[in-house]
Amino acid sequence: MTITLIILLLSAVFFVNGKIRSDLVALCALLLLLIFDILTPEEALSGFSNSIVIMMAGLFVVGGAIFQTGLAKMISSKILRWGGNSSTKLFILVMSVTSFIGAFVSNTGTVALMLPIVVSLALSADTNPGRFLMPMAFASSMGGMMTLIGTPPNLVIHNVLLDAGYEGLSFFSFLPVGLICIAIGILTLLPLSKYFLSKDDNGLNNGKKKHKSLKDLANEYQLSRNLFRLRVTAGSLLKNKNVRELDVRRSYKTNVLEIRRKPASQNPFFKTVEQKIVGPDTIILEGDILYVRGDVENVQRFSEDTHTPLIDTQEPEEVHPKFSGKLRFDKIGIAEVVLMPNSKLINRLIEESGFREKYHVNVLSIQRSQEYILQGLKDQKLKIGDVLLVQGEWADIDRLNEEQSEWVVVGQPSEAAKEITLDYKAPIAAVIMILMVLVMALNIMPAVMAVLIAAVLMVLSGCIRSVEDAYKTINWESIVLIAAMLPMASALEKTGASTTISSTLVSGLGGFGPVILLAGIYFATSLTTMFISNTATAVLFAPIALHSAIGSGVSPYPFLFAVAVAASMCFASPFSTPPNALVMSAGRYTFADYIKVGLPLQIIVGIVMILVLPLLFRF
Image 1 (cartoon, rainbow, N blue to C red):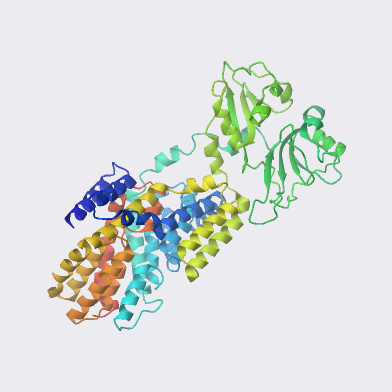
Image 2 (cartoon, rainbow, N blue to C red):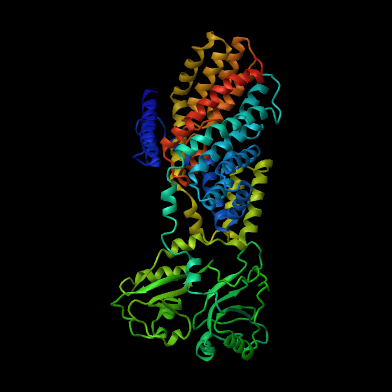
């Protein structure tokens, strides 16, 4: 028992110190429990198969899909309109919405739903997301106190009462307690978050505009100018021909930039449109939408000669909203390439450069001495200092970085690609998200199954670009932290440390009256839940609270409510509850941030509850 407590204490010290990554500290603690033979290998590794850990990984994927489809931005923009420009209004709105959802959905599910929305909201409001994320995680736990199903400790004390022959709790028995917790949370966190969690605003904003955005590039090079669409019909002379034999550039001084094509699969869950970069060997098929750029007279002549009709500006493409006069960058992107002075391409024609044949990218424009050359590119000789705007699939643009002796790719194209949202997939992401929440709220199946199914559907439906992107959305530091710390609860219980500490604290206070005994049970539960899960803490302390109340001749209800509240209202540690861990990386928090903000809130809630619970539930 002594060794376990020493390992726990050392872990807490290193967590607070923050000089060593929290996941590494947790793994070292786990290894020490193994080395001292406190846990078996099976017990030590049990955290990595725990349903909470698996569910957290799935929720990261779901959250990533909500981001990548632009759904988070859409929802946050509506919240932003309600909150206006006031950060205080936005703060209260985020806390209130999160609390309401948390009353019916698990706090982990609530945070997974709200996290991408709140990050998008904060960035749109030009505010550090850290100001909102930790309070949002706390609000999800507070909201859980409003209903019987809101959080597991509520169900634990309900079952303990029933087993002891007492009347069980109704669905809204917790409502007054939950409302008080939320009110305390908003009033306390409003100043604390502003003082402790808004310190990095300047660094955040300064790092946002290091490079030109894709929109900036498109505007600078006037890509939307003279951009037209043509639909390849059954009578089109372009049908089943490749771009080389058509020789569109030479004959019509017109560039075919990209093709949009309906996929073979008609399943609505899969990709609804394919973007294809145009190369010399690209075969044009019936039904293709061609994006071309050139003078209006040349494009019209091309359209008439090939019997390929122009599409009206307002006409939709069946698989995508009406034409906005701009290119999309879902799969195909653009980037600037600066030629090096010693490049072999200097004094060579664009059509001899090999960009299209070797790298599958098109040169759309040349910036030379503050001038932009948009027409007649194939006849242009490249010169020292030329900046080329190239277009291609994101993977091909990334490959250009391999030839650093010939040119330099400006900015970070791969990072720019991540910022492009798949807006046309937002409805699918919304349906999957709503179904996941309903399944979890109605308890149709285990929450972990609902989350995993939702995560897989997000990938299969194209709401996340690829499986690789899905894995990248997972914050492995948080996953490893929780998985490595969960076995600590087993170690504390196995060595008898939990029982010894709790029994000593409670038995020593029994003779000082029910209020002092209530305070002892509350803060003993609150302290323990900082190191083991709230469910395990509630299971441990609920019987102790029940017997202590019966032994003192008072009603067990306030004591059991104290256990439920104390187990759920743990804010001073990032690994005490999954919501706290979920926001740690997104908010760039350290362990010390949870102490600065969460510990005062935890103490204030505790003091208020000790005074209020005897008024709500008589001794």
